[in-house]
Image (cartoon, rainbow, N blue to C red; front, side):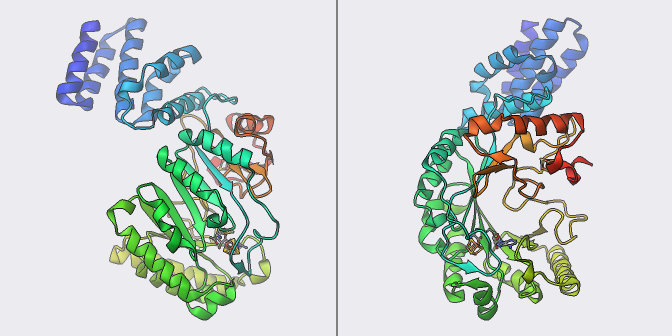
Length: 418
Ligand SMILES: C[S@@+](CC[C@H](N)C(=O)[O-])C[C@H]1O[C@@H](n2cnc3c(N)ncnc32)[C@H](O)[C@@H]1O
Ligand code: SF4
Ligand code: SF4
């Protein structure tokens, strides 16, 4: 048996992982001894880890592992991890294990987070309610986020304007250090002078525009200046063409309102002009006095469909999407994302119907906890610390509800579950 594992190690070196794995799987078929099978599965899992296939790794060992065996496995896995941030990989593995075991109190940490940093803003957009109250994230919560950064695959920062939060650079530096993908939404007017901080890191920059000529823009995005916006977007475009910004994804956002519903095609041209990689149409979620009526909405939707057809026909390198359940446009759109999140709207049928409560923790402007998912920011409870909130009774209850199918209010009508 040791010989055969040794042989697989040689095969791994000489012929690569696929050959080594197929030799190990055929060895499994010939083996009836359970200890021997376990050793083979552990080696299979290690090979999957080296290939960054973390779900497959846990599938190989998860069913017969208990808490102490996974702890030993994680202690001995470093040399198989082919990523710089080994803590995060171990957290992903532990998290997959805990989902597989349907645990509701987790030792693994959240792998994605969304946090509102401030609601200070240089604009006064007519439809925006975010800037009504004064809010800045506390220094304790900032420290907590930084402490957990090594576990995050993804961190979304919201405002107001994130560039007006005086410690935003601390977040960026730490995201860079731990290879965490940082996502922001911005009005773009301060981008030019802040662009350099996104060099050599993974980031997704969403720019909200809403009006695609000077008059419409400045009527909606009050205090904004369309010419200054264009100057900033030119810098964004030039920067992202450089090698040091190759990991930056850009996204253009438009909220459909009665004031701009005719500008969908203009938004599309604008997105192409500035090389945006995605164009996101959003529905209004407050300030309903600006809601388009049924006819106006239909007009906008027809235009969005036309844009999608053009992208397909001309093979443009841009993704067009609307938010989940928004604008009734989702049928057939595969690459749905929530508003700011590129974490999964996560189902993994094998484990649980929705894995978001096992992966994400978000903090709103009022310091409430919610999930960055389809629940439309329904608040769960007050935020305490990442550690306490992550395993709070309220979140445990949501996890239990997903496991047993007696869904709690926030998830009840969610399409992920049906
Ligand atoms: C509140 S802003 C904060 C980030 C940044 N200041 C910006 O404008 O992108 C986040 C997003 O919410 C959108 N938004 C503002 N008011 C909205 C509303 N009433 N309904 C839907 N989305 C809205 C903005 O257009 C923007 O895309
Ligand atoms: S720029 Fe963003 S946060 Fe500021 S008022 Fe406009 S939508 Fe709101
Ligand atoms: S509402 Fe519930 S089920 Fe739906 S995505 Fe959010 S956490 Fe998952």
